[in-house]
Length: 415
Image (cartoon, rainbow, N blue to C red):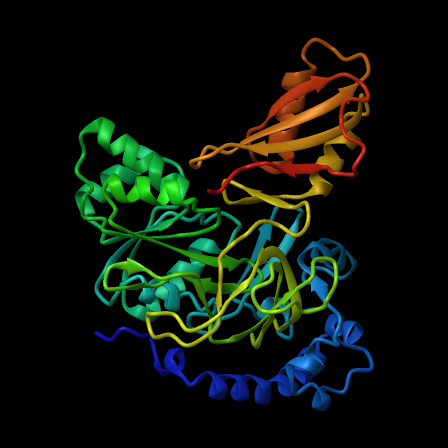
């Protein structure tokens, strides 16, 4: 058993940079064979894009643009280079936004974060990401196959069955959201069920505050590492450990080019300055050129103590736009607009997201005219229908919401 998945992780940084820049013109040329990228990169000579400076002159395509691009040219906005019916899977997130999966091994490059967490051939993984419409569970599946692991396809929910599976099958690792792991641990403790076989957890899809990590460690899972990924890109970066200690930051995946730009622009910021994460991905089926994730972070200087030599980011530091994530699901301003469209009684609304320690709470504050007695319950049903999440409703006086254009206000604290 080695500490690294392959030799790429410990390359000389200059060698890695040279290899990425050598591949970059071919990536741009390949992307331009897709009609969407041909339009976005119109007039670009692929052979000229051989440096970060040249890359920074190309337009940014934002994750928030995907819904519109895809509606114009279903299902992927003309951004894939593999025909839809030759893909392995097609996923659908709320919005809707469609995401492709190709057929190559470990297509999402998830083996790296699992391997960095100590998952090895012969291990049993309880996979608690959703298998319904979204790709996270299949990211884990493909990585497990590459590593030689066995998977319990547990999905989300059914807490008692999750505990039974852990008690009887004794998995070595949990993969899923940290909030659901907390629910499982609490329920197992209340029930007096031994699930102590789970010694490792690889978590993602939502924030992991230090307080929650410490709670999980104190309540039976000594090693909890997080990964940062998206349904468009797959694995982006992941945490590592050395000598039982968590290393600072998250190590970038080997098959990506990372830029941190000033939000709302495509201009790279100086190293260490917080900005929006922009990724260029060398995916043969779904190449992405300067894809802005909407997430904020900063580059952490230096090399990780674990020996992996790629760039590190400080981790997830909030959203650059008003799209936010609640219980692992994105909530878009367009979804709040749809609520208002269905309920013209609402003159103005703001979705406030609050909570701590994995207890996210959404509350829709509404300025309304005269409404029926059951309006709040009807509105709660509409919110669940559109966002797939539970939300509260608070009716407020006309003119009480700030005039700042904000539709979603995420006031959660992550200390």
